[in-house]
Amino acid sequence: MGFLFGAQAAYAERPGSHPLGRWAFVWAGSFAVLFDELTDYNLEPVKGLDKVVRWEKDLGYKRATVTNAPMINAKLMIKLLGLSDFFEAVIVGGECEKPKPAPFPYLKALKELQVSAAHTFIFEDSASGTRVDVAAGMPVVAVLTRIPEKSLEEAGASLIACDYEDQKLWNALEDIDREEAKLKAGGA
Image 1: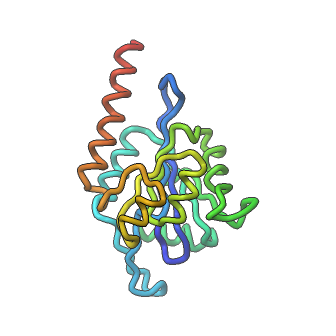
Image 2 (image 1 turned 90 degrees about the vertical axis):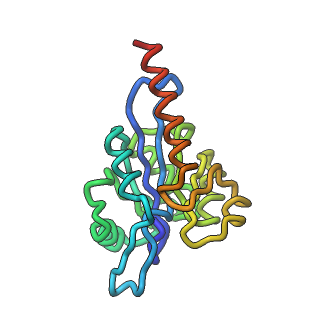
C-alpha cells in the first residue's frame, strides 16, 4: 500500500451472520510509504498502522493486498513492514486481465477471499485508486500520506483520515462494531 513501485490494497472481511453479507476492508496505497530510496528499504509505517492491523486481526477479518508491483517486490515490502502474516492473499495486477487502475485486481481479491463489494471498505492513498474503487462500488477510506485532501475528496472518498489513529476513522470502525453487536444480540 503506497509502495514506491505501486499502490497496494488489502481486503479484510469478517465471516459471520451479518444479514447483508460479510464486511470487508480493502487497503490501497496507505499502509506504508516513506522511502529514502528503494534500495535502502527505509519504510516507515503510517502512524497507527499497528492499531488498525491488530483491530482487523482481533475481529477475524480476511485480508489481501493488491498491487501492480511484481510479486517478489510486493512480498519483500510486506515482509519489511512486518506484515507477512497479516495478508491471506497477494494479488498482482499483472496477473489479472488488466492491472490497476482497472478494477480487475480488486475484483480478483474479492473473489479469492469470497467477499462482496457491497460490504467492502478500501484503505487508499491515491486519487486514481480512489476513483477506481468508488467506480467498482466500494467505499474508500482515504489516508493522507502524499495526496492533497481535496484530490481525494474530489475522487469520491467516503472518509478521509490523516493516518490510522485519526479519530474519524475509529468512530467509523466503532460504528461497525456497534452495528454487528446489535445484530448478534438480536439474532441470539
